[in-house]
Image 1 (cartoon, one colour):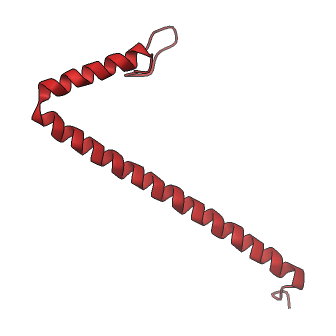
Image 2: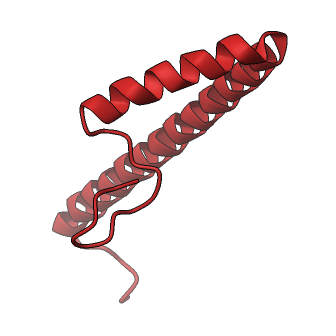
Image 3: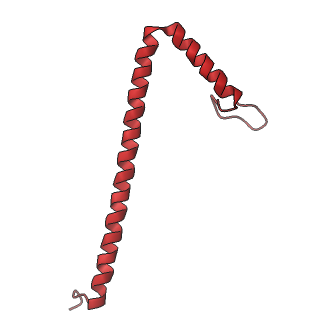
Amino acid sequence: MEDVLRVGQHADVRQRVAVEHQQVGMRAHRQRADLARQAGMAVAQALVTQLAAVDPARTGGSIEAAEAMWAKFGLLHRRPALPGHPPA
């Protein structure tokens, strides 16, 4: 008779199942969102690659201009900075 749930235990089990179901749903949502971001980034990279091949000089100029703006605001970091050294 140890396998029989008492009346109060049914509500506890239902609550635990509901919480676990919600957690699984939240994990699945995060995984789908991560996959969507990865797919979006892949598409953006493919487009940039295709456009760069059309006019390499213009692309290079655009990249340099963008990097200059990022550097102006201290947001461009090509590699981690060592203590006491400015980022490259």
